[in-house]
Length: 109
Image (cartoon, rainbow, N blue to C red; front, side, top):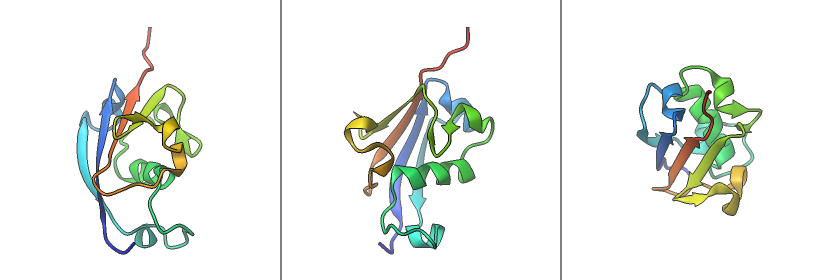
């Protein structure tokens, strides 16, 4: 895949507070080999997307969004309105025009 990939990334339930309070972003991801030259894959997956989000969008308190190479427990991930568990989670291969939503279910008390 040599062309860019256009996707929508959305944040809700308070997760947007970690991303300059912006709830929705349209992003053009570069060809995966340009972004991660040593990557063995040809297509973007949620795993690489999380790394890209960490490096390009996340503004504060990484530990409230990420744990290891995944989202932390309490962050619901939807791929085109379906739970990511039904789509392969970190291994889901992104498609042009996908919508990926991250919703925090974590609330202080």
